[in-house]
Length: 253
Image (tube, rainbow, N blue to C red; front, side, top):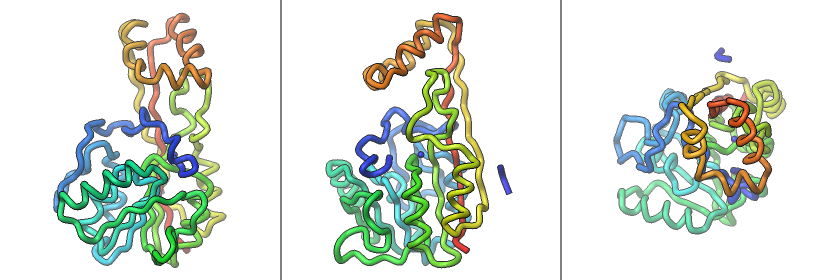
């Protein structure tokens, strides 16, 4: 054994976190039948999914956004459903599915912190064999997946690790550590098959380079107090920024 947007949180999912460490931040989707990891997804996470017998799987993509993961899974699975609270993102995911000619994938506006995964929308009854979440990890996700999955079913996720942006001096409310996630998985009836931290530390040549790299985060970080901490860290001579993600797979006992 190797050693998080939520959905009332979904609308708050940090867009600046969208690329896991080691993954391309390019905004593309895998085309139907492609074997390469979709752009923007961790290759390690993708390998965990690809190792499953997906041909007869019904997959639920929680916090689907514009459907990147769901669209990549659809050519491999019997059925895929993506849920998200972002109406515009769901509409875009539907357009992308139509453009790819995918008829076994559907997208639903739903709050993953409120619905049960066997019926994410009225009249939509599922018995998922796979629950997947990319950059969405919460207690609710694990609890609901545990209730929805039959024995042998899989929950696979990438979430924010406690070290995410540690240089800002503030742990994200979306972040988790290994011990807590392991305990949550076991309490929800999962055998923990894989849990690892994927970490990337970027080092900058100068304060100016560091600030330029996080310019897109300034408004968000000013609002939550992280900007001042990061500027102070740079003033003390710090020159790094850490992206850190927790990748896991649990199998329902």
